[in-house]
Image 1 (cartoon, rainbow, N blue to C red):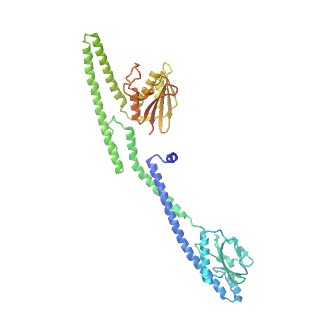
Image 2: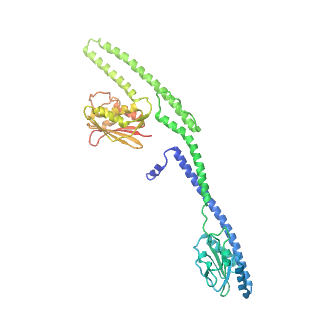
Image 3: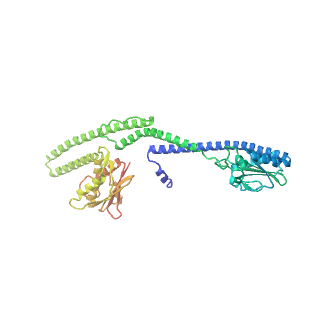
Length: 481
């Protein structure tokens, strides 16, 4: 699994890029496979035609050999001289006193196929007891006549027609048949066009050009089509990320494929329900805040009419505690659910301005590192960071803020220099109204809970741990989408 992750990171992150890459790979593989099949079929057809042509050429060689065997010996040289002087013969023919050894061409599948076919035809026509030597020779290594002259030493009329094909130099098929003791009939010829090469056929250039042209035409069209289908997804993702709930923004336009239309319609429905829920909840809390203030005020006035000072003091303390609880609950809901639009926030500047405010009289906050802008809710993030710094200064006297930014996430770590928190109490630190020990330092014990809720609303997380050298480390992790 670990070895495959670097390969996955090389893939494009967008849906458009991945679809285009996979389509390009599929088109490339399909074209390569079809080209391989086409080439194999072409080669098989070429080999069939080569065998047929070779069989005809071998029959001509056998017929020529039989013709010379039928001539009286005193006429054989006369016929050979006439053929050389006239020119235009398919073969260069000579009668030699011995077998001429020449440097053969390197072995190949086609060379062996042609040689086997020629040998088979000659033995079937001339008999298995006849000495036959068949070989392919390069024109530069070709040797002719008893004196073993090279090809360029002969008169042009003798061998130009049968053994040359300018400007290329195709291999020469040399067949030597022992027609009598000490007499070898020498026949040299080229394979008929287009079979003048023994090399394996590769993919023709026009086939490669066709593949490139087809990909060049289809790829932009496919990119345009996929882009049109993924554009609604981009709008949907942007709307889901920002999710403005404090204004009556028009619903997203439902367009694209049926699946994308269904998802967009579901998102619009969810958006309307969330707006309605938040509106109803805000009205509810405003009503609670208004309705509770009146009876609490009335009870405080009536408490002043109580003659017993002890009972009056207890009654007022209970009312004060009740009022603090109500205010704390309302403040918690207000601070956690801040309905504002998502925008680019200068986190670095925000933290440094907070640090300057704390450092107005003495150096309390130190900032290390830097970070870029982050897309989020500015007031909510300011309240989250403010709560973290307030707690660090309140319980740790001093704080250091470490900023670590990357492509995937933004990490803000606030380290204080206080006594830390017992490990058994770490799980309870986010509970509402929870304050460590019985210290009375103000507040309602809601700051960290509010900060964590804001972090989670941005898709992040807030973690607390004791530092290695003492103090408390509060780490805020915000993902970058």
